[in-house]
Structures are given as C-alpha cells and as structure tokens.
Length: 509
Image 1 (cartoon, rainbow, N blue to C red):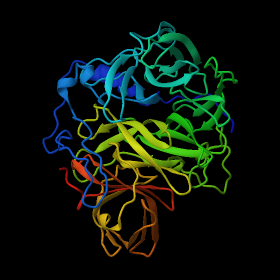
Image 2 (image 1 turned 180 degrees about the vertical axis):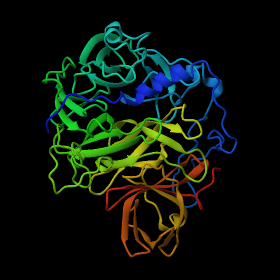
Image 3 (image 1 turned 30 degrees about the vertical axis):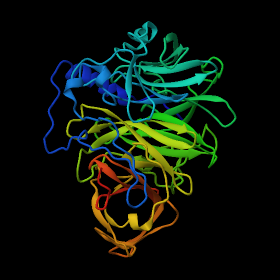
Image 4 (image 1 turned 45 degrees about the vertical axis):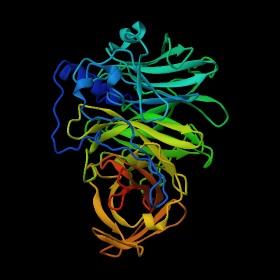
C-alpha cells in the first residue's frame, strides 16, 4: 500500500479528548448526580463460600462505589475511579497500573497516575510518575497532561514510555523514563519518537513487548495513517529500526484505530494485536487480530488483514471490505437489564499472569460519561485460539467444572455485533433443564461440551443456524450483587457473545 501524507482529522487518542474535556469543561465543577433508579454497586453483601451446587463463587469485590463525589479531591480514595488508558505490569506479587492524566470534577493530574494491587480488584493510589510535564515533551507538543503510558522491566530497571500531545494536533511525541522500582523515583530520559503534520504516524500510544525469540518491539500510533511497529534495543529500550517502522493496522485517514497492544500466546503460537476503534465517548470498542510474526500481517476471524480497508490500494477488486468489520470485536458498550450500563470501553492492556489472561481497559458509566473507571476482565480462549473477555468484571473467579444442573434457568444474553454502532442491551433467554433454549427469534438447544465449555445450537425463524461456543465460569454478578454463572463465547462469524445466569444465581450469604 502506498502511504500518502497524513490527512489529519483530529488526535482521537482515547486519553486526549478526555484530558482536555475534563480539564476545560469540568474542572472545579460539582460532579453530576445520578438517578436513584441506578443501583449502587457498593450495596453488595459478602459471599464466597461454596454453594449448594458445589461451585465456588467469588466473594464481594471490595467497596466499589460509582459516582463517589466525596472522593473527587482525594486521590487516595479513587480506587479504580479516574483510570483512563491503563497499562499493566506485574512485579513479584504486586500488580501496577499506569494511566493517563484525567480527573472528573477537578483539574487533571499532571504526570501520569500510578496505582497498585495484590488481587487485580482493589487498587491503591501510589502517586504520579512526574510532578509536571517533562520539559522536552512540553516544548515539542505543548502538552499540559501526559497520556497512554506503557511499562516494562528490562534488566534491573523499569522503563516507562509516555505520550505527549494536545487535542486535534499530530505534533506529538513518545518519551522514556526509567526507575529502579515500579513506584519510582522516575527519571525522564527524553524523547524517543516525534511526529508532526507531515508524519505518516501520530507518535502516541506506545506499547512494548517481546517476541518469542526475545527481541523487543514497540507498537504505536493513533488514527492518522495507522499503527506501526518498530524494533527496540532491549538493553537501552530505544528504537533501533528505521522510523516510523512497519504498518500493521490501518483504517485509513477516514476512520480511527489506536491503543495498540501486542501479546504472544505460546499455546496457539500466535501474536495478538489488540486495538481500540471509533469515538472515545460513544462507540469506542476493542478489536483484535492475530499473526504468526510480531510484525504481521495480522488477520481477523474472517481472514481480513488489519491493513485492509475499503479504499486501500491492496484490496483485490473482487474482495469487499467494510472498515468497521475488520478485526474481531471483543467488547463495546453494553447494558444488562439491571444495574449501570457501560459505554465506550477501550484503550486496553493485556496481562498473562502465569497462564491466566486478563484484559484491562477503561469504561464510562452510561448515566454520566464524564466519569471513567478501570475494568479488569478474565480472558478465556476459544478452541481455535481467539480471546474472549468475560462479561463479568474480575472478582477472583476461577475456571472450574460446572454441573449441568447449574446451567438451566433464566439468562441475560447479548452479542457484540461487529457492524453495529448501537450498544447492545441484554435480552432474556431460557435454558431449560431438558437442554432446550427459548430466546427472542431463536429456538434450539444447549449442552456442556466439556467441564466449563457451553455450546448453543440455535436456529432463527427462517431456519438459519447459529452456533455459539465458549466458557462458562462462576463469577460475581456486579449488577445484581451476587454470585452467578457468566459465559463468553464466539459464533461462526467470529462475533463475541456474552451471557449471565440471573435466575437461580446464588444469592449472597
């Protein structure tokens, strides 16, 4: 594909709009109140003991409060509040997240936020990486906040990569800081990559990872002409490849992708490129493609390359590409029938914790999208190697054998349709003890195809079949405040399905 000079349509990095909007529009203003019809997620009773069906459900996941106006000016009380663009690092027995400078109802932080946890559920405020914007980054970009960091350990030191830019400007840069520990103190090491109006790539949203041979790479970019990967020196943590690197994903300058993050799954011997698409406040969503090499090409479930888009020079005339359809859609905005719905989830990082995989991203509650929160979700893997994030935010759940008797009952089900810009609202389905399924527009059957594998075989009113298969796990139902089964599956078109059992779920004790 020939790359033309960037036709810049706005710096749509997830962090960018949030930081500017909150600083300019909400600083010092009282936080909006929330309708009393939205259940408070802090009103949850303790649980966690084994249930009558022999399943071990997670207990109460801490004191989580939405719209905590009393914490606005107290970062130590934020917990997962005001997290945007989270980057995760595990060091020893502690998890760390580093995130963009945002805040609701007050001025944003200046210097990147740091939190830590021992369980991925309860997060403690540590402080900021810097006291202010490093001078070289500020001079180049005019940034007043820092965005979208990533952190990795190289040797005995910790390397933090950060983004500096302002809204609607490609005058951006990626900087480097180092520290002897995840907490700091951090020393700025200057700018690594720059971009301006003539650049092919917007130099923000860095993410660094090793390939299977131990070579270090950085993937980066936001909107503009796409996402690039460049080789790094694993001793110095600096680029050694020719700038800007190799293009691995694009939707052209007419649509957006950003927040790249690459992981390698040795079980499937594949590299996975996670991205965020579309608008920060409305239809932000997480996509994925996979490749045999860290430099690509990356393909989605349908065999489309993540560099394919409708007006690409590479696409054969007999191939129809729909830009929004490229990349498996893992999660977009959603609502179950009770509790708070969530909008614009995205800017993700991924953690492989000894074979347990997690997706970390921010999301906005639909009642007031000025607030942002950290969501952590366990990732399950389909039989053919596609990641499937859980519909339940993580509370300590473990995959375990699920008896057939625990599956029957009333479920809420939704699909993250790849072409839909409407956030799905869950519908009620019934899984009968006999193995039959009754659902709006569908009839069919369910069965356990393994200890924790649930398979749905359905047909619509015209006889078109629908096959969904995935993992069912005893989880915490955040919306209803109790333990219950959660399911994440994939259908024959590569679309992600979520479900949770709501009748027959074990009430908290």
